[in-house]
Image 1 (tube, helix red, strand yellow):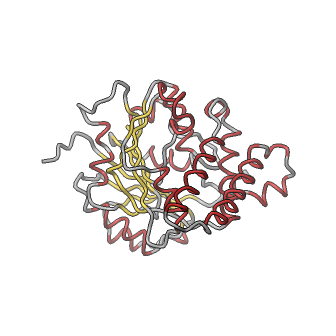
Image 2 (cartoon, one colour):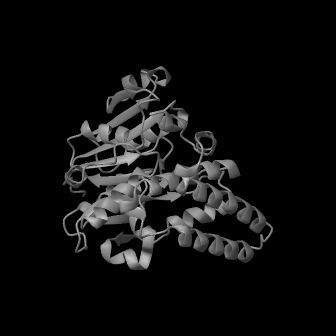
Length: 313
């Protein structure tokens, strides 16, 4: 028997939703832990199908323009429409692996959860989809291992930037603490989840990784897509030195490359090391450029970013 100690709302930013998104909604509707409502923050009303609301009374839809969309502000706006105890943020392509996702995700907020620090957020494990390549499949297991963990300020020296790792692909937040900490940063190109987590840890809260809360989510990015993604990631770090200044992420990247190469030899696919090194080079180049974006000409910034709308504001 599940004790429904908390009310739960799910918030999903959406852009041009497809059949996969419909499946996400259907799987959320059959979760063992009840969801009060699913708040949709839809970018561009012309891409929204009103039939989705007619078929799913649990949906509450709000529209923003592409120019208005911001990774942090739009999600915080979605949170403002919720009065639930727990708010769960997801992306439109994060497919629940089973109907226990919400139940597992909110366990760190339940009475009796073993931690000496109050948990502000918990995030799910991301499993690779069927089309996921070998290298990205290993990256998933590196970033989202089988064992759960609770991270707080005492872990910064040991875990470094991993202490602040959290992903809004699927993450739950205790609304009381979320509001107290000011929600997500109001303007950010990317990485609003880790910025919030960093502030939360520094304020004395913990971030929980729940390995038993699982979603299927992965991408096979090209080299240029990796460069664009890491450029925006580094821009977010450069713009938030209060969070990232003393926890550089380069060492974590090097560790990932080394362990992935070792894994490729282990599974007898050493030729994939060339692909690994090549793609890692694009990642690192994007990161270096992003950290130094203020010194770059505007045209180069626009060529490197994933999010061109951000630079027009």
